[in-house]
Image 1 (tube, rainbow, N blue to C red):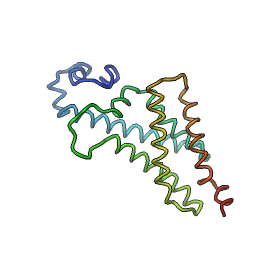
Image 2: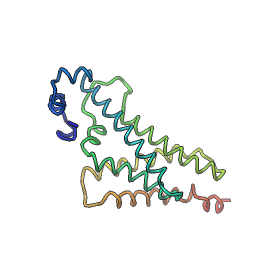
Image 3: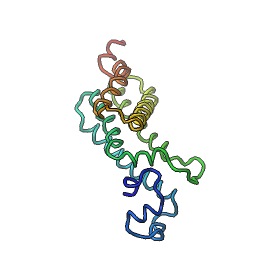
Image 4: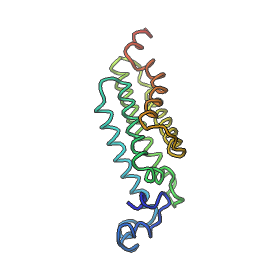
Length: 187
């Protein structure tokens, strides 16, 4: 992929060269750079949501481990494909229709998915599910911000350690609200 080879500021000429074709052929598939950007965003969204669902489904019945697995799946994408992540999260200046923001859309999809997981656990405990949407989106924002910082500075911090640190922070609040012991002690 040209983005991996040339970085987040890749141009259509570089895309064509990487594909071993002409810009004319590239423009048959993508109307412009905006169209290419949207296609890459769609691809990243599908990959990331699939990885998150798989990681969280494969996690044990331990809710904290499910949280760690989800965070680690997101950070794994950053680690494996940093240029693609940069390209998607820091889009080039493009002409986009008002309100069209694929990054916000992706964060919304992930936040809603996490909220549903939290809501399911709260319902299982006969608890109020109203906070689940707020918590799901807050978790996405926290992980995204920490992931961006990690990518930008590339400290000698291993992905698994960062995932565990973020899970520790999030779990400090969630454990009091979504675990069975919290429900019984709150009564």
